[in-house]
Image (cartoon, rainbow, N blue to C red; front, top):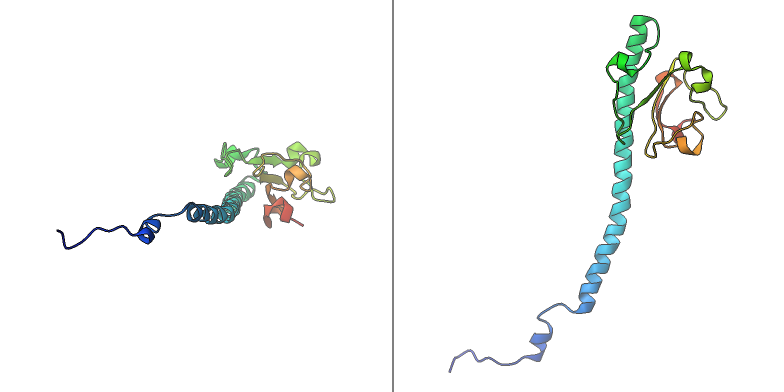
Length: 160
């Protein structure tokens, strides 16, 4: 007979695998971690996209200011600086408005309905893709705007 006898151990049989309660507890823990991680990742991604739009607008503003200095008038559109069709991080074209051509009525306005720029407006319609001339309008709050003739570039909701 073999020196290692095989015998039945009731305790060993019970501890050989995971119980249903242990598996459910592991799933609950994973669910809680996912519930915490997904919104954090979403906020991080939104901040990264906004930062990209701010950088794009800042770069185009430099080019537009250079065009203005060289030609003594604002660019008629973004194609004048080679940015025609440039897309924002959400996949939509940046919006450029020559205020002289469009008139004050076509300009972006602050809470007092005063134009936020003197020469041109440059902005992204943001995550929702909707916008209105007053930056205080609900659909404009997520827009990434250029204001104060380039002294402010950021979310419309943060502009004061």
